[in-house]
Image (cartoon, rainbow, N blue to C red; front, side):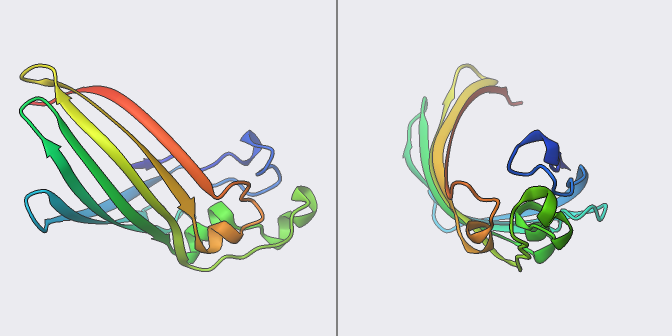
Length: 166
């Protein structure tokens, strides 16, 4: 998986901070079905090139609450965490950047990153094509929530797509 990193000049909140270089990540994912409609998933993602992307981890609980031949609905909740390298790269303000950013120095440690919840759907269009979508919300916790770079702790998302499967 490719991690795009961060070009610090792209946003006013990160100008003056060191860039986070694009890198290649290895991702390990495991899923366990607690019941037919309840799944527990865990993931680890490590920066393979040593470009200060660090390690991230997540734990998610998903529940498929409706299923028919033409539609499936699911929901889920989860938590993510990261090591100190990842936290410092994305949420830290090094001492060397204090003057350029006007923000106080901040050196976060490893810890929780966010809590998240969402709902999704999948609907087949034909034998191979299907449409999918979802919406959700997240809240930064731990060191990211305390970062002087954080302007908003809450976030939302929505997506929709069409895909083909064999």
